[in-house]
Image 1 (cartoon, one colour):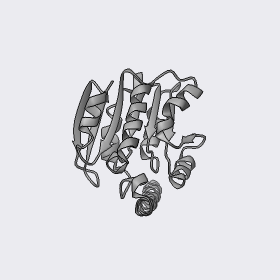
Image 2 (cartoon, rainbow, N blue to C red):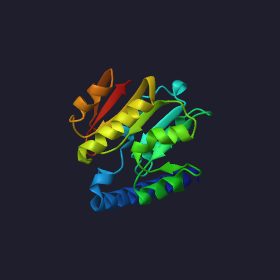
Image 3 (cartoon, one colour):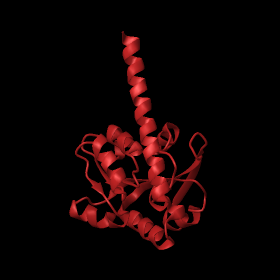
Image 4 (cartoon, rainbow, N blue to C red):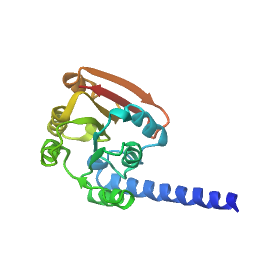
Length: 199
């Protein structure tokens, strides 16, 4: 009986992931500049990104480009009791998916509004920013505006952890951060570079 229940649970989880993946693919075809990838991040990429965060020191985190909420769910699970996450997803359809899975979570739109939103919430500075934004396909001015907003909002020693599918963002990040480390995650579709940028 226990084995059957375990099988049923795994089957439901797999079906949910396939459904989420198909929806993500459809949104990518419709809006590639907003979605940026054909499928959600793999568990291997999720772990690689989450491992860059020192959770004991993480009180305020922003997530940019949350997609279907793969990272969001991991952050919510790991964040300490008095912590707060500010989730940004500009695609209304994807925002609805996140709200359905993370009840009570407020979702914001444009990542360039990060400084104003923090000011409105009386949050002095962020400890971490996790980004899935597809900088490679965003207009350069938008990329610069978002990175400047992130840099302005991070505390000294705070980190931007972002994944990309190329190294073309390296020079943008090195201009704004004192340290930029890059690791590579092969077990993702497509394989991804993870940037760990310290203010």
